[in-house]
Image (tube, rainbow, N blue to C red; front, side, top):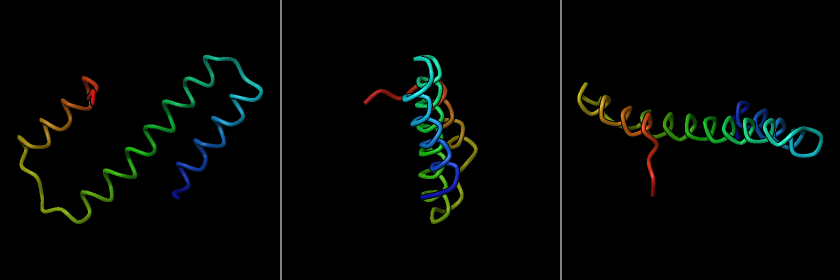
Length: 68
């Protein structure tokens, strides 16, 4: 696991145990972002370069929140 993910997990654990609900929610969001960043990095490292349109489309999906 990467250092940003470990730091985010640690922050979430501390916020859950000692913090307020708002702190834990922020920590959950930060952990999700760290995991997404790691996943996107792995995928894009092996993929051919994307077109501008493809990057814009993927960024728009992230901005609006992708629902399963």
